[in-house]
Length: 516
Image (cartoon, rainbow, N blue to C red; front, side):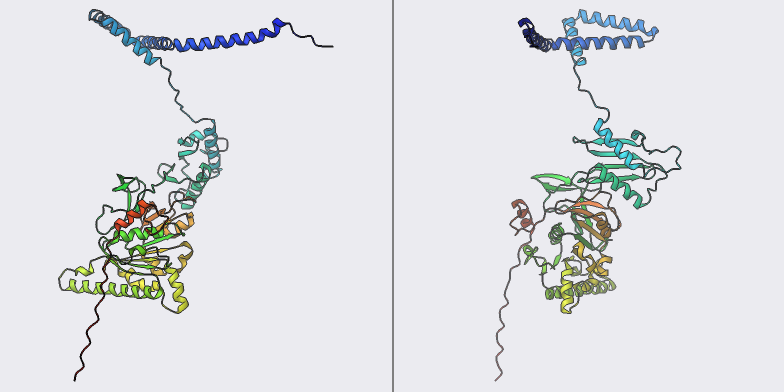
């Protein structure tokens, strides 16, 4: 059967109806915009009236009479003063407009996605924080996460930035293995690629996980405010140390928390070991230490890699030698051993005679070795003495003789370091990407933060003796002769270099006349 077309009045009626609804909606929106101040004031008056009614109902009956008398008296004063009613009306309208304004609702809890993330974390922690014998477990499958998580914060992307976890008292938080399992789990579930700090409160059975901000990499080499015997290895978190130094960063001066390494006769960590992968910034740290040491002492540099990273220091005042070959390194280190012994003997003789130590024995002497394992392999191939063997005297007696040894090596060559180097380098630094195991093998303990796989050059950890592990960012001290170096960093290093020594060629002696 053929369909009959709808009557014209019915087919056009729906379109007219939709158009009418659109016109009505537009008119309502326009009226709302025009009458918005009046709506706001009306809403505010209603809220003020409700507040006044609640206050009047909460007032005791014996105090309502004096309160009413006070209100009437204030009203008479307002009526009698000039422009009083107008001022009162304007004040009431302003208060009503402020009270009736539309406020942005404040979120008081996590949204659906954040709740799901917290519940997932809670379920993942159940096997570690629960036992079958617990009659009322804090962590149980299907339990409420709000009882175990006392605080939490999320960033704009919905990722956790801070989490407070309350765990049972029977959890073995005194064992490093147990804590490490929890930290690795929270690190994996909260998102990789960020550095987390874990603070354990064993007394209160509380664990706080927080995301650490990245340390600034814009601090370049400069003259730091330190005293002789203090060396700035780099900079760390503000709450990790109790001292700040003024630094220039981006053309402005600000205070930054430094990692200060103290050397000299009163130092408990007179020698330093730096470990890292290629490109991690170990050479940058040694170059920064050399520039600071040249302010008050002399520097002897042994470069095993022979890449010319310290060429800018050649011939500078205070640089005793810069050796890259095996023969030169052996000769320089043998002289350093004899110099250490000479200083000890001279200081001892002066002390026995009741005199102060000679000045030449108190001037700091720095021995910087970059990649000594390479020279050790060459010495073994040629049948020579390992250069590290000549470091025994400076390492053992360097503190009393004002001699400081700094050794930089890579992870794959740590086994080539001698026992003397491992024993006497109590100040340690690990730079570049490293695992928990690698950091612990150098520093002796695992860091309280989670190492990341991608870090800028000069980023790592430092531990001075038996102190705590500190995050470290070495000041930018590149090779000024490197073409890829920025002009600002190149000029910063050049400004710190001492003046070059003037080479004076000795005149040939006159021949002795033959006796006739």
